[in-house]
Length: 313
Ligand code: HEM
Ligand SMILES: [Ca+2]
Ligand SMILES: [Ca+2]
Image (tube, rainbow, N blue to C red):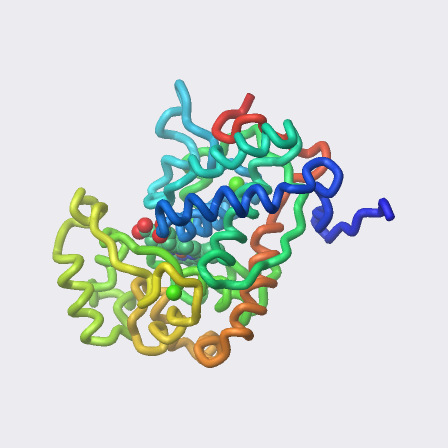
């Protein structure tokens, strides 16, 4: 029948059935070749989704390239977006989709589908995602991005309240942090862990601390060296698995949150459950992913389908 099943946010699981039936297939096949060329790109695309959704909702605002007078003052210039990479891959997929079904598929849906493939193609669950997001025409300021993206020193309290604001349970919040099973952290984001004056160094295995100090010696956090050196996010940083939770329990988390989540009495039970049961992690991750990717979406006439992802035209 023609009736569309829509969720609370006005998204639906068969949104492109008539206008671009092959959309999921095209995104998947474009990404599988891109991921072979650079196996670190799934991590970049998963983080890209989080940072887009966190600032003004999942509306592809993060792809807008600063131009003219705006330069240095827009979303992507925020220091919190340090390390965001591979935004251009969304544009490449968009170009293929414009050939197949012109002006139909939004850049914001492509970001979500790319993140979904990042998880699936690295060994995680294949998450059914509702579609129908529209793109924004307004560019958030650097200041807005600074205030909505979490600092690298975020603690358990702050992430629980951040994800609670997206309707997630504690179990789902612990699951979505499992995104750090992929990718890297640059030394500039790690150096605060050596600062014993604040609580950021808690729950750190001494051997792991030694490893971090070797990879990230005492450079200044703003130095080129600190921004050019990185550590893997878990022992299997190209594979979507539960090793992140083993590391959190053992005190081998790179960031304060990756460590504290393994020690805090509110989160530790879920960290242990996920370390022991991959299915339980994948199920909780999938429902958390749908909540995160449905956050403050534009639908219908509230937004547009931009024809080029990095420009508002
Ligand atoms: C809310 C608490 C979070 C904090 C404080 C946080 C912080 C960070 C930081 C500081 C990095 C390192 C960036 C770099 O040095 O290049 C990072 C990497 C990453 N984050 Fe998060 N993150 C959080 C939540 C999330 C969520 C919800 C996702 C996905 C849904 C995510 C996905 C990733 C991925 C995949 C990477 C690796 C990126 C790459 O290799 O390029 N993070 N995160
Ligand atoms: Ca956004
Ligand atoms: Ca992993």
